[in-house]
Image (cartoon, rainbow, N blue to C red; front, top):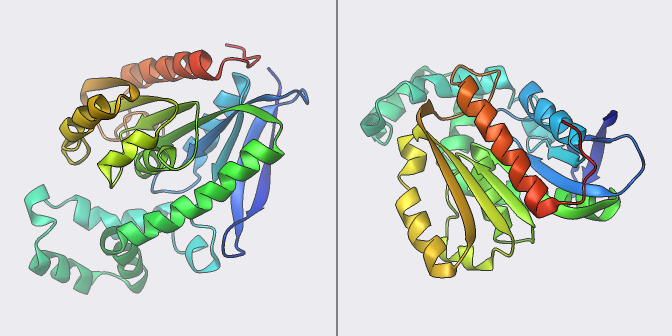
Length: 272
C-alpha cells in the first residue's frame, strides 16, 4: 500500500505547538487511527518506522513529540538522555533509591544531565501528567481532523504507561501496551471501554512488579485484557534500533499487534 507522511503541528492546552509525525495510506479514504506514543527517547527513527508500518497496514498513525516545548526540544535528545541516565541505569536496583549514591552521581553530572534526571526521575509524575494533557490534544486532532474511524493506541516503555493511563481517560477501541507501567490509580481500569493487549519482557522487574496488581484488578473491573510475556527478553525488546532488541519476540509481537488491531479496529484496507 502506498503511504504518505508529514510533520504536523498540533496546538495543545497551553498554546504550545506540539510536533507530530503522521503516516497514512495515500488514498483519501477514511481509515482507523492509531496514536503511537514514544519511548523516553522521543519521536525517533524507531517510532517513525512503527508509524510507517501501521500506515502500510491501513491505519492513520500519529506520533506526538512530547518534548516539543522550547525548553525541552534541544535538551531532551536521544544522546543527552542516554548520557544523563546511563549512570543511574548502571546502578543495582537496590541502589537507585539511595540518596547518597544519587547525590554523588548528580554532583559529577553536567548541567544538562542534572536537568534531565530531575525531570525523568524526581519530577516524573508531573512530567507524565503534562504529557497526558498533550496526548489528549493529539487524540482530538487524530480522531476529529484526520478522517479516521475507529480508535487505537500503542505505546512503548514510557509511552506504554502513558497509553495505559490515557486509555482510562479517553475512549479507545483497542489499546496495546508494550512493557509500560500500570495506571497510577489502579481502579481507573474501571473506566476502560475498549480492549487491551499487554506485551511484556520476561526480564523486566521494575515493570513486571506491577503485573500481579494489574491482573487482580483486570478481573475485578472486568477489563477485556490479553497478555503475553516473552521469557528471556529485556525491556524494549521490540525496538529494532536498540541493544535489547530480540528478533523472534519482536516478530511475534508485531504479528500479535496486527491481529489485535485488525480484530478491534477492523475496517482498514491494509496490506501485508
